Image (tube, rainbow, N blue to C red):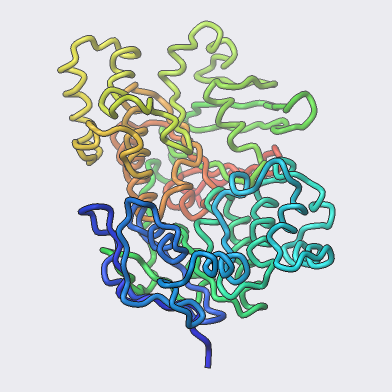
Length: 473
């Protein structure tokens, strides 16, 4: 009979009057891989904090029962709980770069974690996560994002724990790497018969790899069957002639005069359509986005409506930055943290469109919010008071208020759960349908790209691999 590793009964958690978890029951047996999904801000992280006993002072928590390996987790001493957390519970965090100490080598950090330090064990665990022994001598900044995440997995499994808790471990990685890392964790969990709790907003990954998927709704878990998401409609009809917005010929970019980021790209980005750009980490997607946005230099030729981009940036820079709007992956970067959303949204109207009367600016913002189905009460909030999905939709609205011809969206949904991804994409879709705006969408989510784009550009190691016309195909 499979042994129960962790069991929780009637767990409640609240922030003041706001109830986050309500009479929640949960249990996980050895070898089980349970995926936990749900919208941003629904309480997934609070649930993990309750399990680990790492509760924020503002959170009120109680449970009728909470057991780990048949021990009463609620009454354990701090010392005993720390021992369990070191030896029997492994944690995989979202961002390896932020979770590792930049002043120590990977080997030093693995050794510090080990209950019984042993160099050969470190080599073996690195081999299991497909890393070479030389990684032990390297510092975190010397590793790629994928390698860092492998190190985090190695650290979680190094003491062969009874339970692994993975909190959004792949959200910063591209789609192929996400699949690879998920498969790696599942294989190791199977090898060691380890119970694994996987919190993710990647619904498809959860259903593909987990033995059970739980959705957190209204404070408790619901087990659901996966349903296929709707596809979005395209703008262009089959066979219709394309107009070109950006025309690239032999475009290259180098980093510090050595590493080639982009190499001789020749391609067209059509007007009035949504063009997706995909590729592995390091393929050059963000570099291309920043070149098109006018942020970094390039070699070769880029024409926008028959004018060379260099010349446009030399003589019409401010006008160009209005015409082509760049949306960040982290939408908080688009806003002044000391201003309300309303104040930030007024800026493009005031400085780019020269609308002097404040009542007129506010009316235009409210009209756009109605059109995009956004909430008026967000306007009086500060950026940190909004969820990631809400903030990203406000960032899109801010860009739209400048009346651009093109939006360049750089991984704008990668940190969001499925529900918020869908809301952001619906806003983009509505904008594109009503304005016929050119949109360039960079994403490592291939399913998302295929759902809303009419064209796809595939990059690999800075080179164009192929362009795909999804309407014609």
